[in-house]
Image 1 (cartoon, rainbow, N blue to C red):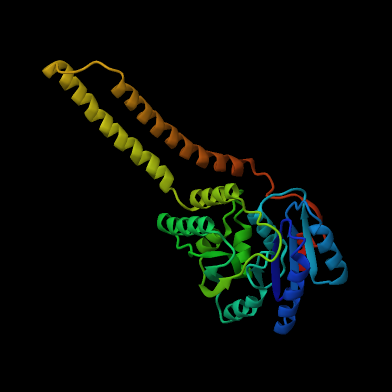
Image 2: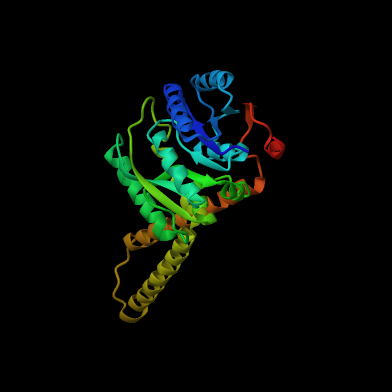
Length: 316
């Protein structure tokens, strides 16, 4: 069993791989630990996998997992956790926004007895106002609507104990939200603060569309508040509609003071129709996620790897 596994999801990071390895290697050599680097190529369109394979031919600690296509960042991390053999694992992105030099501090906290040590961002360099603002709103909204305390201003950069990894392997949801799952698992958790750097090279694979999907995964995985919202809105609208019915009957039958017209009718129909469509959409999101998990398809498909099968790790 290794002392430490470094989980590195890769998507079009050819400009970062060599310097990432150099910095990681320097950090690990100063820690005097037996470590493995697990690069997970998540369907990159550049030559990332070729660079990783060359590193693995030169350095025995470099391992790789090559997906058959792009399955997503969270699935790539999950694959690394499935195959890792460390007493603890560090999850870190390859864009060098999260500094590898922080790993010894994370490791020291883990050695002190914490099962999870996550890195909390003091600042985020190289990101525009809209991305910072939407991230801030998302994390604080998620914290308010979930029943578990998910830390704000944190990503996946953290160290987790092998016992936490074992629990995560038993949580095969298709819509992964690992930072929520890790919070849900519990155990002793703490954090260290750091300033996030700008991306070293390349462009972020997290488009606003992917960020929106990620946010939906996080909300629907750890909160049923949207369903409660749909239910409460339905009751509220029904109540308002009931009073409008009473008012209309009063005007029509008692005072006989009404003006025939279609404006109020159309407004009522459009309002009720909008509420119904929103509610159906919210319910549909949950049903879609249930359907994905019921189909029980594999989370990912491998094209190639130099790692042993996870079921055989105990004998390695």
